[in-house]
Image (cartoon, rainbow, N blue to C red; front, side):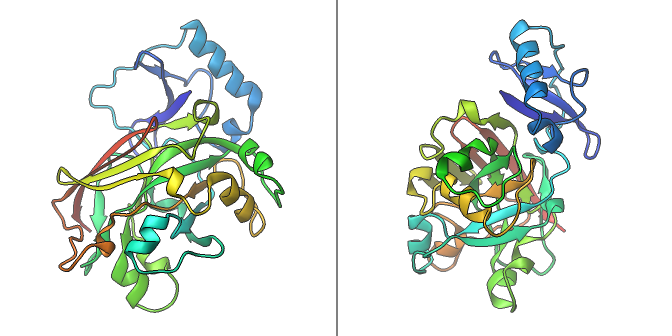
Length: 285
């Protein structure tokens, strides 16, 4: 299933995109697309049955904003330097273990919402990523099979980063990763049954129509199952939590000087195979 949330910020309603590309209203069946729903197998089965029976009312998508596909997100866990190509382009050694950092849940916005360039920023960068959406509480998972069984689905994420704030201003990466609007997510949560191999997905990103990133999750240093298993050793993952799994080569930081960092007025478009496409216009904060 392709689950999504539509409507104004803070007032999104649950919806489903059917096989014909028609937007369907789920409001009569579920309150929201969130951790409570994702952890409830019977509720998800009811949604599948209604979709299959063709009884869900259609929504007019004209002018309708698409919000983040998951509501009430508890935390956003991120994996840094998780593609061989990205580590190479930035001149960094391949990590021996996953590099883990957090983004605040309030950085998450819709896939086509405006991204704000922070005040004083000169190194705002792009990063297309595969996002994992957790569907079952995960603690100390031991096998890859267990890890994948705890995944509800996948989505497109844009891990926007401010490199000066991240690297040159002291401390950890937090200052360069948590600026407002720095995690567009969606358009859809595609349930795990529709993504049989998360290690075979192409990821692409364009800036002002120019292709900048063209990678594949097969280049990940730590695959999806290993990432979920690893993170569960250090923190409890709850239904509705998000894990951004890293970005392939092609970010601005890895380009020759002068590096083409993002500026107000730029347009970024990005996609992951089968998971949909995002488009953001950048403006000044």
